[in-house]
Image (tube, rainbow, N blue to C red; front, side):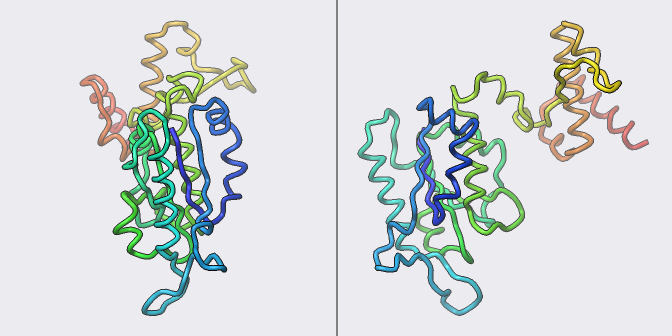
Length: 254
């Protein structure tokens, strides 16, 4: 998988993309993350990437010329590559607070792509022609405003890369994450068995895999009910689990 990040501040990515899971994924050659400076595609001697908005108003607007040139250069590079499955029609994602909300489901979908192009917005926003004629998708990581799309790009890249086969030590690591099943993850414990009088729950010490799985599932449902009850509306339950959820709801309302 190859991910291109188009940004005005490439140095912001040096630390986050060189450490932990992302660093190991690149060292293994499973994922390639390419950072491109949008200013390199400006044609004037000042490398201008923004200008005042037509009609007036506060803030500056990112110009279309450098971004179109940057994306076109990346697509030309992809087209000339020899990587199996390379395509020129992969997603071009504009990171903006106006975009659709990023989710685990979004990450799963993007992880199946061979190439991704992420555009980090900045200043007061981008020229509307970038939205209409360049970006194929717009994504937001939450209902708040950041100084630019760089932090959002880091979040999306991390969430996507860890789902690429071979990146994590065990494929089950990702499958057990919160939101993968539509629920929050169950409580986790490790040694020591007893710490300051707080003991590891007995089912986890039983060695009975069916009992452990049942306990984890129940705890996952209970935690979701307490912290994110909205997620239960779309979760898949067996008839027995549906009854259990209703009982939990009744107990919580008492």
